[in-house]
Length: 273
View 1 (tube, rainbow, N blue to C red):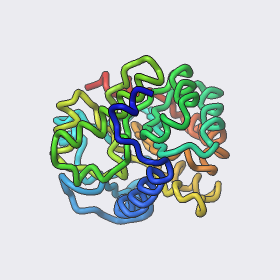
View 2 (tube, helix red, strand yellow; view 1 turned 135 degrees about the vertical axis):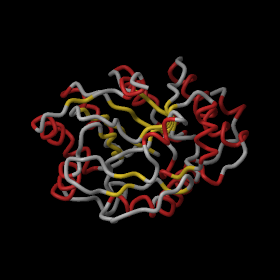
View 3 (spheres, rainbow, N blue to C red; view 1 turned 60 degrees about the vertical axis):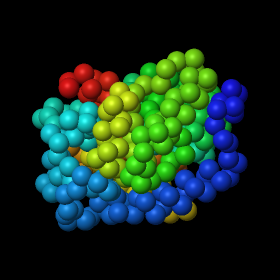
View 4 (spheres, rainbow, N blue to C red; view 1 turned 90 degrees about the vertical axis):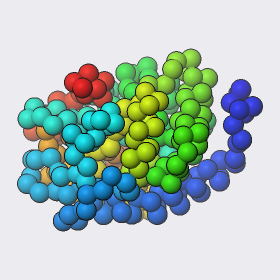
């Protein structure tokens, strides 16, 4: 690929190691909020965090929707309408994405997949399938670093533009300007840089601990969080590496539909701005 002339490549195993270590360490603070943390100190820099209160209502985030708007950033659609925005993060492919795509296709649900460089390099056919079936492929950075520690515009832009170049080589299309900070770690400067690059930044209002490969949640644990904490306008974050998610998604989508929810694309959310 021409990308090899422009990017200093590292072995895939090193990329996966960096992803695993940074994700495990960096998401610890954010992961606590996916569980049952009562409150989080408001902050314009650091880990994305949520505090859940009344069932069926949006959680309180450590940055408000109004504050995020100035950066073209979102964590939920503040609405009473029963709509959901389904998103997936993936640092690598381990065989679960096809079943997830099958369930989405069965239910005619549009989703967004936020991918890193390793995923595009190793699984281009799945990326093409996502696009052909109407899903958005968003930018999760090339190497999945802690972006809150990246202070220079040059370094920040390189993480995003490197992935854009690879995406275009694989698909022949320009990458949608949708960005999710790895591990939910961010800084106010990051949000400004992403906005200045033309990006919309997406956090989330519902997620659960689904990324540990050797500690996958049970079906019952997943449903408790994903049904009990769903709310109008939710941006849901799941990981496509999760075997639990692959196994339950068909039933989960059915249950959300039975609760009266419909599924919208992030494109529809952005159009509301």
